[in-house]
Image 1 (cartoon, rainbow, N blue to C red):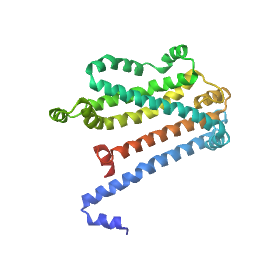
Image 2: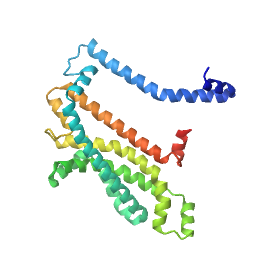
Image 3: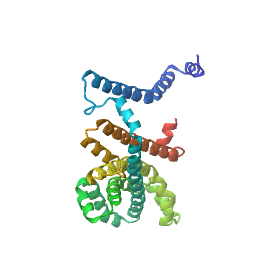
Image 4: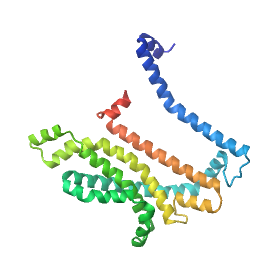
Length: 283
């Protein structure tokens, strides 16, 4: 009998049941998704075998992994191109979104004047905006970067603006009574209060910047050795090279998951010592 089990026995039945439930949830959080993923991959492989599906229509998982290894040089060089657009657009979205949100927080008139334009950018499909970008912008990288930035910008702006405007009114009045300037209120009260909102928007924008980069490559029709993963997908589709197409899709999905996990970890590390959402996870 382990020390944990002995500790559980010393608890009352209700508390012991709660401890077991929490332990099962911690295990299930990792085991269940992994088991479902393994089952899905096995089912995919068996469907290909049982129905004798040609490789150019639906390749088996092993063929996709083999292609990922064989075409690693081409695929990973394209991944670096896509990642460059992704992270640059995310950086610009953070700088622009936070900067504009701070400006909105300082002046309601500025917020009422410019926030509708941000909404217009968000709700207009990027494939509808790109023909205009294609006319006015010559550089291909700048076109892709602008498209990805438009997609990632709004979550940062809206979440940070919401956080800056959600400061407790009593705390704000206390700062004013103590003679705090607008800059001091912003630095010591409003920005810390907006941090959880900003980090939530950052996690959303991280995935959207990758989506924006891939969609931008699709609508731009970028080709050549220096093109991103979307171009590899288009090229593989034209050539009926399904294994390479699936390998490129796998890299895009894996990259999106890693971006989300890294940003979630950053958010947890920043908030874990003082914000309620992270403190609950620590318990």
